[in-house]
Image 1 (cartoon, one colour):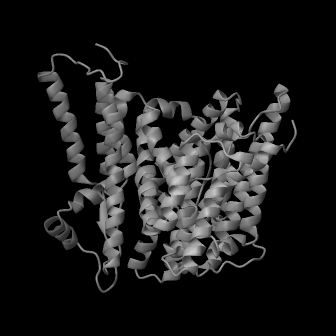
Image 2 (tube, rainbow, N blue to C red):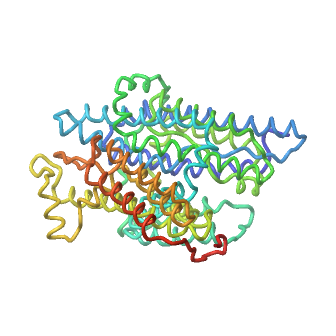
Image 3 (cartoon, helix red, strand yellow):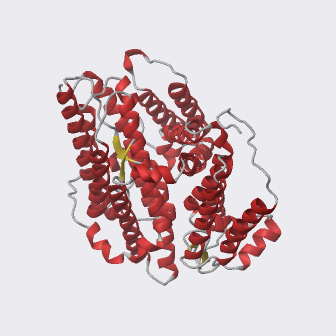
Length: 534
């Protein structure tokens, strides 16, 4: 089995473009949402990510070649590996940004608050990596306890709203770029078309997007190019250091953000297991435990060197196999990303390539994640998937609400948040703000609880239903879900008993038990797919 074949170059572009867009997104959000300094991004975050991606890509390329040599085959394809879009959003908006706002509200300077936010992200990354490593030994048990619909529903709301809808809003703000690139993306990736000369569809999308952006800018029309002031990242050599280990002194942050770290770690474990199963179905049967452990170690390396973003395996092995990629594309991707991270080249690229030019690919990823939740579960579980979307919709509504409130001056020393804000939003805006922000806190857990409870109802597993409701009450009692606090600059998570919601779950449990005991004479199933029968 040769290290590099022709198809590896197609695979390199497919995987590399995905990682490339995610890196641009990280830089954009770190600099312009969190307001991190250029030095923090270029000297700590990017080098750490570059080394972690190089480590994982080299291993998975070597693993594929080793399997091919052992089996006497030359068609084994390495598992795709890189930066996952989901933790980027979650760690920024639900770990680092709240930590930053809490620090600012306590009187810290912006520079001090940035360090707190970065430390919280690094600890979340390390925590996610530890969960992935230990979870590799128990992944089969995890999948037995939590139904697939529960995990996929939580992912679906991320894809549909946090990624798909949010970036569609941005696309339609620049319709000359956003609409054509979006329709091209959907045509290439959902239309089943084959391009001449094996051209990657992503390359065409990116070139078209960049070209339209600069042409509309030259014509004086609305274009994101006008906002490309440069990131300040300069070319140079930026070597990694053990910056992340210094953040471990703030381990309390790991407990404070357990509502994000634990489910994201478990989702990464299960998602990686699904990637391994997908590869096995395509004929490449990699050792699951070894593969999962290395995936977790990659996140530990990233966090230990100073990155707040874990690495992960991608679903997409079959696509890489079909275009002829083997082992070399993985190694080449790792080298390419490491060079871009260690030399500051992303700063140069970001001066000429607006994220709007390639974000249609992110929208496609969001659509695909959302669709999977309905396609990969039994048809009868579709209502359960929908139930699991509601907490995430609450979180997305809270995010949009805080953006709007921030735009009109709330969250500043002159106009801080306060309890009366909830009253005004409910009375004047018909927005039940207390419910929205209660759902936002630990919404991943809440989504899993609601979906799993619905699955138990549909599958007539009453004991499991009682267990999930008791679990919801327990999580609310700890404060992992539903408990929030209002500070001057934000409405954010806080550990502590959320008694109203504890009573809600317990009351539901008691009433269901009484109804079943006193009034239910039998159970029937309305057939949706013919899978369950009386």
